[in-house]
Length: 198
Image (tube, rainbow, N blue to C red; front, side, top):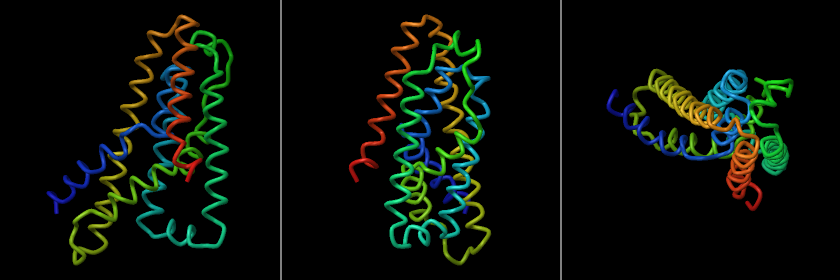
């Protein structure tokens, strides 16, 4: 089973770690606000992503999306919230200005983004359903899969936070900071294309 869990982690890393709404917003928030001001937001994203893992593992996601109209309603709400985040990242003042009173990203904001992130459901659902843990291993195997995917999520999100924080140290210049914020916002908008066009 250990080998199967290692394969699960290796399969999950590129899918969960690739640029998407949560990862790009996390890096963008860290670049715009600095790492210490983004830790609550990162905790919200981590806990929200773990909640997505649990929703998929327990079958709640499939049940909710099977209800009439729920898929469309959830997609619209997720798109609106992510467009708001894109605007926030593009227009937030540079790190130096943010330190002088701009509101810090919140835990709730990160949690809502993680729960509303369609890429998380697609990536986590794919690796969870496709893992090769034997059915006879039961609940223990399911719990192990959830723990591995939760750990991968935390590693991936921490890496993106560190990336954004590293950029923040360089972007004390307001012009460079504005360019970086617009680039992150644009990448986040591009990552929403499948949701908006789907």
